[in-house]
Every structure is written in structure tokens, then in C-alpha cells.
Length: 300
Image (tube, rainbow, N blue to C red):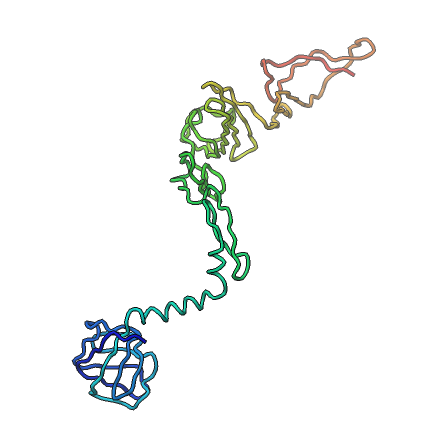
């Protein structure tokens, strides 16, 4: 063991078998006494574990001799090399499983990451272009090359991940899923609610598809924009309803069927092999394109 010097000055008191050492007139902190240095009193030696103050230190093991009080002492300091060597030996021992040699055998390269395939066995993995990249500064950050956040552009978040779109008619909104609220400006589909979900897909800067879904009913619509002009909204869902005039169903392709019940009609006018009623007027439960109510007789 390489010794570096000797400190003395003052006196010490130690209980038999104790690890606590009390000094009087000592300056151990000021002298930079370190863990691993050796305390010698009356021919007995013990290793120092820690130094609390100028007048208090702790031994690594209980004092091997009898109790001493006001005794002279010496502290032998260990050289930095001698202090570091046990730590290095412990590191080498801990890594003696083959980890160091396995790591040294790998040929490092760009975008490669070492990992363990078994005990003491390592290999290289590709960690891809995303590793080390800057992430989005916010859910609508469109900076090229950045890693997308959970909830970025409305994708992947559970609750609260959808950003409100300020203007439906804007042409610079990024691809993504958005929320529509009362304050959102722009053209809405007929029958749209104040709140809805809006999905935006872009093929190019001037070729855009918007899909609208009402938040409170089944209304679904879409529209496209080309060369800076929005086409009208088109409903994608079938509508149905009823009122005092009957029932109706309107399909997404525009076809509409109305049905109603009329009573007290005389169908007694001969019409070839059939009989018909007089002309009837029926107010449809839903208006047809072109408007107006139709007049037609009933046949039997």
C-alpha cells in the first residue's frame, strides 16, 4: 500500500469496539483526511470510513484495541494511486463476466446501438433515423425532420389531444384530425352541429379532402378543394325522419323516398282495367329537389 504522508496534532478518544472517533484540537477536514486513510493509536491500526468534521470521524470497523481517551495518534494518508487501485479492481471484478470483451469486439458505426443478446454477449442494433432527432415543439409543429409527439396533429392521444381548427376554409391547415367548435369560422355542411370532428387529408398544397362528423348525431359529410376553391359539402350518411305528413328516407346519392297514409278516398272511377280516385294533393314529409307538392290519383 502506498503511503503519502502522516498527519498528527491534538488527541483522540475511542471506545472499545466503537467506530466513532472524537478529536480534541484536531483539524481533520482542513487537512483533507480521506476515507481509506489509516488511524494509528498505541500501535493499533484501523481504516477510516468517513470524516464528519475537524473533530469527528468514523472507522470502517470497530476499534480493535481497548478504550483510549486523550491519546496521541497518527493518520497515515494513502496516495491517490493507492486509493484508486481498489476501486479499479472492484470495477474489473464486476465486469469480469465478459461484458468488456464483448463490447470491444463490436465494430461501431453510425446509427448503431450496442445491446445484450445474452449474459456477457452483445450485438449491434439499428436505431433508425428518428433516434436523436428533435421532437415537435407542439402538436401542430410542421418542421420537416422532427419526431411526432403523441397527440401530434390529433393522433394517438387519449382525451384532449385534438386541436381546435380556427377556420374551416383555410388552405394551410396540416393533415390531421381536428375539433370544430362554435367559434370556428368557415362553411359548414347543412345540418351541422356547433361541435364536430374534422379530418384533413392533403395530396398536394392545393388538393385537399375534408371529412366532417357531427359530435351529436350521425351527420357525415365531405368536400374537396382544388386550386384554391372549395367544392360544396356532400352528405355521406342516409337521413330519415317523420312528421305529420308521413315518413322519409334520403340516401347519400340524393335519392329520396317518402311514404304516407291517406284515408277516406273513393277509388271508383274506371280507368281501363283498373279504378282510380280523383286527383289528390299530398304535402311530402320532406321536400324533393325542385320543390312543390305532387298531385296524383290512387289506383286499385
